Length: 509
Image 1 (cartoon, rainbow, N blue to C red):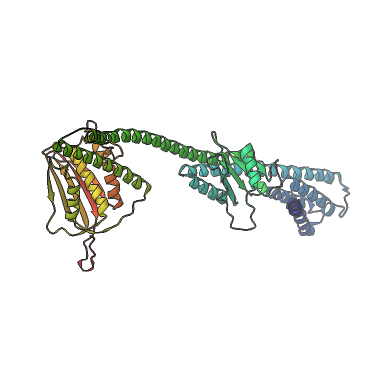
Image 2 (cartoon, rainbow, N blue to C red; image 1 turned 30 degrees about the horizontal axis):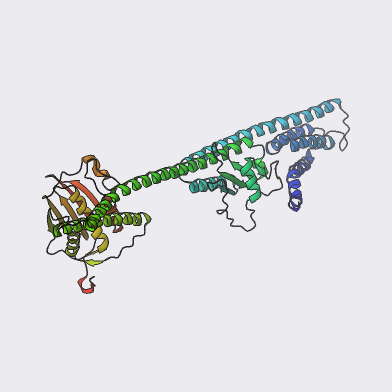
């Protein structure tokens, strides 16, 4: 109530100011024309006053123009038409001229004011169209809810010289006020209760509206065709707001549509992610249940035979070997699952140190000694190969996965090859086989999770190569695959590794 009482004097002055100014201008003009107060010159005064009324009509509204027409006619009669300083007009011709002057001044003022208002209306429509056009163009380039809000706020501030606060929902039809800030402590931030009511009812409220007109801000709903993105609150001059309902509805509808577009886009992405997660879980569950069953069955069968059957020493050793192979397979699949989880969660931390590539190759071949018995493995390391800076455990897993993949796609008795070189501060590792190679269409998908080439031998979860790529990328390196011209496939790993400073080198054990 106090706010309204304080605003009344300013509003009254704003509305009475044009009338006072018109009275002052006509008075000064009358004073300036007083030397022409003679029976020979009062006709000239009438033309000057008519011209003055026409000029005033260009700058003022209909009320001040009517007042200017009346005052100018009365002043012309009182000060310039004989007899002077009386309202009596002796000559009938002067009476007719006075009536004509008043009518002409009145019509001149009204028509000029009407032309002015039409011109202002046309200009206002042009400005509105330009504002909508620019807003639409800027919003069409935005990507993301935050960018839409930023562009909308800047556009509102630039075109209307006022601040606007956008309060959007959090995706669960609850307004999120966390982003509301004000640089000026005296600025009124949006009222939560009013914003909630506007958001729920989808009806404008606040200043210059029917609902809660005493509020310091005007609130508009941002309503889309499918969802209600939020609410906008702003403070603007009454002249810019009144009688422009269609414009403001269109203006905020454009912003609401842009926000709705982004909301629906995010909802589609979330739905797609959930769908992919469901499919991922289903695929993983099926693969794990199938692949784990095979080595578990082998372990259980061999254990049962050892426990309840009389077997020779040779059979016992063979059964122990089967148990070991099945256990190693289970361990490898478990490690792959754990490594994939660590890669996707970003929880892998590198422990870089200087290592000899020969030690890495030796460790990998020892781990796969039993699997490599029926193959011919060739390792090629230059004599001048420097030490390289890598995470030994992670690279051991990378090379193990690549060798297992080569074994899976090669026939017993064929040759495999592991090579290492150092080129322009990069460690280059290559694993080659002499198998049939990969189908050309499968190369782009080799490193995808759970991808298995059609017709490939049973076994594995389809995670080995995707883990290879993840662990290599943790080293900021790259991995690629290609088919060799003479047959077989080759994987190439490139990892940054500068030459070591032999004077300040601490070798890891």
